Length: 327
Image (tube, rainbow, N blue to C red; front, side, top):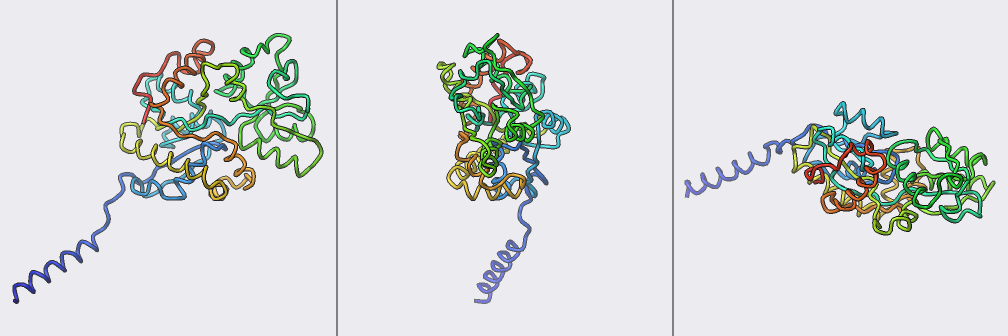
């Protein structure tokens, strides 16, 4: 009987020791997720807020970048581990020999033509008209250039392009009546419409999304992959981590689309200069649909081929190798 008690006591002691043993340490001390002022960043913010990567890092934070040039610096200095990105930027880096990968494509529609002229109802109506945009380089500018050519808006029919410093500057110019037509991304569009409704000075309307116009101009390429999540070179060898981030992002995307009000509150805690209503409206109108880059490789390569034919440097001069398409 005493031996039975000893066995039982020993088992209880072992169990107690197991309970007080420290939990297994996370593989990383810190992971930094980065993104711009756009809906592509909203699932990243939810991943931070919900602790989706708690098993992978002791600390996970979101870092806001303002333009692709700033992102390039952050990536070069390895100050971010995963980032939202226009789909051409990681292609450039990969073709320069850096082992970055594009994990997914999640944004298929976020650019809008906006006008205060009721006669402007489609891109075709912009022939010879002034058009203000913030994009002078990078992917949106390339897409706009290809779209205008496909629509025959060249030469005398070309819109009179003018470039604003940033979305805030473009918004101010339209609200003061100095810019009748804009090309802007979400959530800047929703913010502009909300501010205009408060002022009540003029009627501003969404003319057409660039993506809808693209579908009509390029029926052979109905999907337009624009932005997704990339893994930086110093984390690219951890495929299990990349897969975990990609899955967490997909889950967060589904949640944000299903819970736009709650998602907006989380985003506002990190991007507090955006009003809640504008964030929620942006979630509702942006085509957020996270798909593995490997699964949408044909759509990506179709876009890269189009860019290669006209601006080869904008994708690094060639198609990325098969291993580029993650996760």
